[in-house]
Length: 286
Image 1 (cartoon, one colour):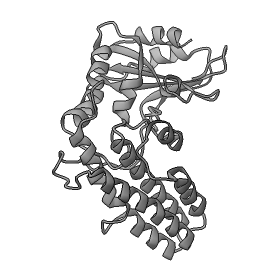
Image 2 (tube, rainbow, N blue to C red):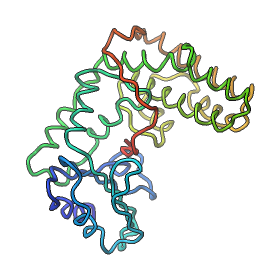
Image 3 (cartoon, rainbow, N blue to C red):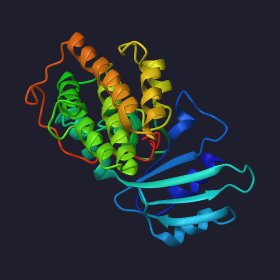
C-alpha cells in the first residue's frame, strides 16, 4: 500500500523523493501506527493532484497546515491512517547543516529531524538525492553538538533565572494549572533532549520517549522512568508534591551531566539557536 501511494505521489510535479517514516520504520510499531509518508520537493505540489491520490479514501483531509503541510485519510481497503507530509528539500538540508555542521542546539527536540532522516526508507528516489541525504546523516554524533544541547537545556531546568522550575513555582502560586502543565511539558522536552544527547542518540521524536530511553540510553539516572511518571502524576495537583518530584528528576540529570563531564560553556561547541520546545510531528516520531 505504501509503495502504491508513494508511486502516485512521485508523479506530482517537482517531487524529488517519497520516504516511508514514523513508527513503521522504528523499533516500537503498534497496531495504531499511521503510515507516515514524507514527500520532498522544492515546494509542495499542487493540491489538485494530491486530491486525486487520496480519492477513494475515507475521512479525507487535504492541505492541512496545522503542523507540516500535509494530507490525511483512511485507506479504504486496510483501514490504516495515511499521513502524507510535504517538506521542502532545502529546509531538511538546512536542518542537517544546523546540527551536523553548525552544531546548533534547540530548546528540546534538537536532533529529531536528523533522526527522522536516518530512519526514513526511500520508496521513490530517482535521482539518489535522499540516498545522499541519508549517507550524510549516517555520521557519528558530533561532540560539539552534544555539548551545545546540554549547555542550552540543562540551565533551563533549574539553574537559570527563567528556568522551568521557577516558572512552575509561580504558576502554582497563582493557582494556574494550565500553565503548570505547559511548563512541565517544556521541562520534560529539555530533559529528554539532554538525555538523548548524552547517549549520542539523535532524538527519536515525541512518542514513547521513556521506553526509547530505556531501550537505547544506558547512560541515564537510576530510576529515571519512575521519576518521570512521578512528575506526571503530580502535575494535575500542583503544589509541593510536584516540586519534590521535579527536584528529584532534575537532581538526577544534573548529577548525570557532572558524571559525564560535559562542558557547560555554551561556546565550547557552537552557538545554539532559540526555538520553541514543541516537537516535530513525530518524525513524526519526528
